[in-house]
Amino acid sequence: MNASLDVRWSDAHWDVNASVFGSEIRDPLAAQPIGTDQFEIVNAPGPTARGGAEALIGRISGPLHALASWSYLDVSECRARSARDVP
Image 1: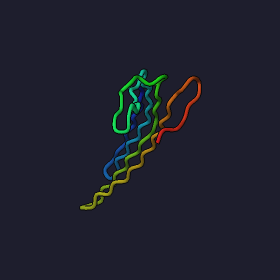
Image 2: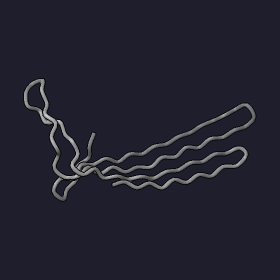
Image 3: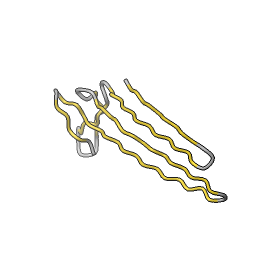
Image 4: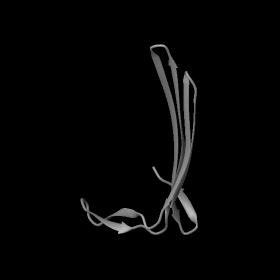
């Protein structure tokens, strides 16, 4: 399941885009070690949730084109009514 909202505004010199989004993956895959150099792919218990936001701002002034961007991503794993951050 996922959802997003995107907004855009522009005029002769500016272009601004903003997005917020979120998703939940049910029955995600996980790598489980079964030896020193081997892993087994299994379904992880519980869903994995992701969410974030992004902004992109552009400015045009004659031959100069400047672009600035910003992103934020929050990822957690849900385990039996608790969550932990994921690196």
